[in-house]
Structures are given as C-alpha cells and as structure tokens.
Image (cartoon, rainbow, N blue to C red; front, side):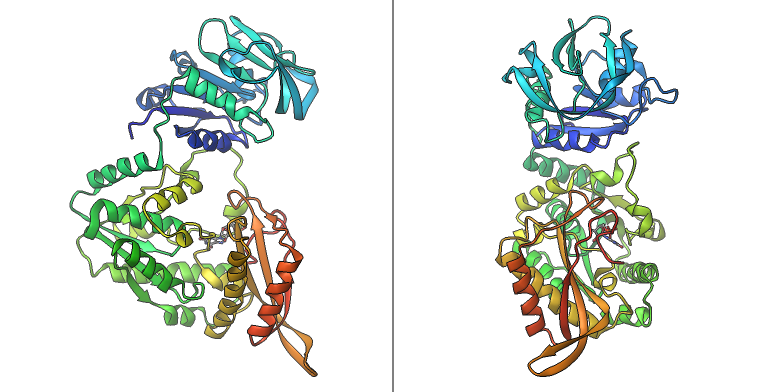
Length: 512
Ligand code: XMP
C-alpha cells in the first residue's frame, strides 16, 4: 500500500482502536503499532504523522512503556493523547505528577488559542478525561492552549514544531468535538488528502492480489458470513477463474443459508460456488456429544478434513484465501478481553500449514465496518453484507445438548421467525447479533384444553462493537410478544419462549 499513513503508537489504552476507527472514517489510512516498534521500521513505513495513544501506565512507573525517542524526532506532526501527552512532557523536561485531582468523565476545557488544532471550536468545549497523572510544569518549548478546572494544562503545543498534546481523549464520543480536533490535526496541520476510500482500497487490493498470486490458484472456504463473502468477491474481481470457492454446508447453518449464499454469488457475479453437502458426516461425528468444546473441536477438525479432501482435486492450488481482519492482527499491548481463551474460536486454524499453502488475506487492513462498505461497493447484496456474525460451529453451539438433525430443524424454524420479524420491524440492523437457543428442558403448558409438555427456547439479542463486551438489547415488548406467539403457534414442539437478559460480561454471547 502506498497510501499516506498515520502511525498510532499503542501504549495500551482501551481507546486505541477508537482512534484508528475515527481516522479511517475520515478516509485517511492509519495503522496501530506497538510502542516498541523499531526506528527502522517506522522509517520504512514512512508515516506522515504520528499519534501517541493513552495507557493504563503512569510515565513515572518503572516499567512504563517508552518508545525509541528517535521516532519522536522525525520532524513530522505528532499528537500525544493523555499518556502520550505525559510522555512528551517528561522527555522534554517537563514534570508529570500523580494528580490529587484525578479527572474521570466529562470536563469543560477553556480554549486559549483557536488556531491550529482547535480551529472552528468554541471557547468552552466538553471533553472526556480519564487520567490520574497530570502536568505540573510545561515541557521545554511548549505553551498551554487549553485548561480545565482541574487541569491547568489540558492541551499544549510546541512553540515552533507541529507537536500537540491533549490531556483528554478526543477519540471517544463523549468528547463532543473531539473528531474535529483530530481532523484539524490530520487535515489542516498534517495535510492529509483523504484518499482512503472503499473504491481506492478495492483498486489497490486487486492489484496487490494479482501481484501476489500471479497465475496460481487460490482456494477459499466460504461460510456465508460477511468476511469470507467479501474475500470471495475481491478475489473473484482480481483473479476470476483462478479462484476455487468452496462452501462446506456443515448442516448446521441457518435455514436455507447455503442456498442463499450460492444464489447471491451467482446473481451478483456469475460466480459458481462449489457446495459440498456434508451435513450427514457432521451429524454422525457429533452423535451423543453435548460438551461445548468437544463439539467445537469435532466440527473444526471435520471441516479441515473435508476441505483438505476437496482441495486434493485441485493439485495446482498454491494459496488459501482468508478473511482475517485488522483487529485480529494488531499486535496490541492493550489488555485483551478474556473471550478468546474462554472458547476456542477460529475453527480453520492449522489449515494453511497442513496443506502447505500460502495465505491471501485481502481484508487484513480493515475493520468490520469497512469490510461491509467494501462488500457493498463490490456489489454484494445488502442481506449478505449486513449479516450478523455467525459462529463457525453454527447451530451446534446453540443446541444445549447433543445435536441431531431434528433439533437443528426445530431451531432453524425458531430462528427464521425471530430473524424475519427483526427485519420486518426494522430492528435487524440496529442489533449487533440475534439468535435463538434450544434448551435441554421441557416445560408444562396448556394449549387449547390440552396439557402440553414440550421444549423451551431462548431468544438472545445483543448490542456490541466487537463482541468482546455486549449489552443485551432492549427489544420492544410488543415485538417480543409477536415473536413468542408466532414461535409457539408455528413451531411444533415448543411451548415456552424466554428472553435472555444477560450482558457480557458476566455472560458470553453464545450459550456454549
Ligand atoms: P462469545 O460467545 O465468546 O462470542 O461471547 C463472541 C462472538 O464470537 C462468536 N463465536 C464464535 N465464532 N467460532 C466462531 O467462529 C466459535 O467457536 C465461536 N464461538 C463464539 C459469537 O457468535 C459472537 O459473535
């Protein structure tokens, strides 16, 4: 990629990815790198500006993260945020102390200088503070450009160089005009041209793929999810028939999902997927298994087995396409959430080495929202592009007992009603993920004059930005009422519907 680049040095703040997302939305390309990146690597990346993130550390701690200081002398614009400000202060002979007036939450800053980073803003601006340390004295050759009640130095600027530092977090939504400040820094001060658009990304990536792949073949496993679909579309545009797109129908997808994906590709691109109907094999292997991690392992291994077998039919394949996204590859020093170790995700790990294939990962620079945008621009139907995340092991981890074809059919019916109603009431896109779970208990009911003793199912809907944390969605009661009565009336075998009101943490999103 030869786009102009903002480099974000990550000191471990929980907000680092937010800085990147904000910048990308301005059509400017940025990368997050660990604070201890080498000077040489930075030179090679040739950034046009640098941002120093916040951190849970104090600069006065002995093991505080300190970058190679040559990076900060590159004579390009620098913006330090929170810890980044304190770091700039300390290395320029200012003093940072543990503040007796910690500031967490909203604060009003008084702007003293409206040129440069605060251009176009008011005298008083609402911002979000989150710090225990503060500046006691200014660093050498810096002056103050904003103050708050508890921070005499809420923002500072170098006297002659384009170096700025903010005590607050402009990247969080609570800093009302924070985006404008970042924009001023990047566009006015650093002179970025805002040419990072989905279209330019597609053009560049297609060229990159062609260069990487040459006239070799690429095999790709499609799941029906957004990421692998967009990878397929990009690869197809780049290399046409050199792409071998395989959809393994594991028998645990949503109702009609495999067929819908196949049709979407045929309609949009004339691209024929190779669909392998492997449901029976999965059911056989899952027979009598109810332990969640064992289910995951069986499904993962069986998937690899089938995929490997199928790929033997194409001996001249040299590459494996994968839908790796940017958050998967950031070498972040941030504290990672616990979910990756609580459940074994990523079922196709191990494939490339086993099959001796090189990887093509055309989405590795994108966040999820950007993947969707690229998918739309490539002409994929909205229904595919806007899809909720769906786990690799599929409905198997939404059946809280052993998995049988009958239970899968039952759950598919329940799920189809829930999702259909979400679309109908315009609630699908405002929900991050929604699904149904088949519980391993029966309950007593009464239908007509008859006593019933049938299955219970749960509905789950959450809002989240990345699946690491999530809030249960406050779906309207009237909506839940419609869904519940449709399920009980239309799905034989269900006589009770419950709604899951657990957030993550302490719950996980999936039940297994
Ligand atoms: P949890 O349940 O861990 O889920 O809160 C977070 C997100 O990950 C999805 N998930 C999986 N995805 N293989 C996958 O590809 C898995 O085994 C798996 N388990 C959970 C889940 O749907 C949610 O979006």
